[in-house]
Length: 491
Image (cartoon, rainbow, N blue to C red):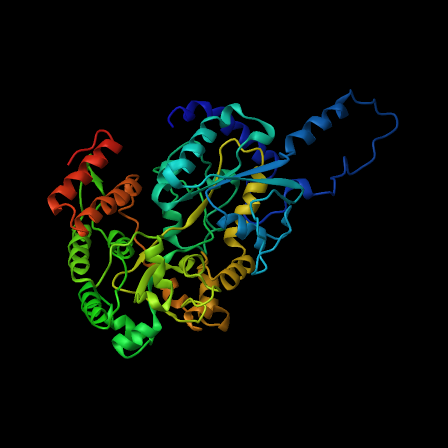
């Protein structure tokens, strides 16, 4: 992506010029310049009739008006329908071209073209599988300098695992260049800003989510295994990995598995003491090694299984007959992963509970970034501010979608209100725990190698957990795969 640097320099200059013309350098949720209809009088006193008429200067006015005009199409690049559904359901004034609703009353096709403040919104969806989304986005940003008009990219989304790849690239704009200030984002959690801060300290994105996570447990299983489903009591039984392992043994005796070894990985990996790569050397952190050793022991005993995340066998735990004690996940896990509303699921019966688990961690999240060269800087600014800082919008997202939003004040309000009670959790209000978790997320060990290393260690260790290879072979296979993916690294 280095070739973008020179190619986008002129586009950056043009964007800054447009921002100045649009009045986008001030903070706050401003009304776009295009919506201002009141004109400033040409003068405060009348010109005497004897004054000589000026030259043909009024002919310049159309050119000035053109300078403030933004594009007619807002192009947004995403990998699924999540952000489109948030915009379609919650962005004031947004209209989707497809009015078809699903069984929950939401738009069934949120990525259909939309309109907002007179602009056509086009959604460009490329699934994440096989790195397809990033490959497509790379191509789009590489071609941005040669694109024009309705073909210009305006907004793209990134996830934490690969955010730094785009944050440190000239294809993404700083929030400051959009006119978004630190004061605008003061109510957001610091870790959500750290994820999208470049090497020079520039903020390059914003999120409506705070994805602190915990342990989501089966209440009926907890009653059988622990004699209670109270969140405080369940937390005592899983408050450390040693306690968790003890509870796993008790769960097995009652005919349950705790979860899959894949479910616990993020909790371990978020609590490492160092980065995956140090001085071009691949380093497996002691906490990752503990995950390997704990998972092997639990899998061999039958207290955990080795099912792949999102697979059919893994999904059986959503049903009572799946005999699964817990899943690990953030708030987005509630609605997207537990099949609330489906007949016979634990979620539909309000049968899940939530506690912090052995270690605090976060999982996922989506960040909104502005593409350098956008011809809609004011619209991009307004969309980002509305979706990530408007408290009424954020509370609506939390209440309707059970999402953990990126606002300290909104989460505090929810934690002390019945609005924060979640049906699939049996009416439990998890927002105090989620807010505390978001305050404690530490991203000091985040690196550009996280996605590749996290995926590869899980892939290679599954062969070890299932007995297909020994530990040394699995580790060597991991090193080989990572070194092939990132030439120049060694171990």
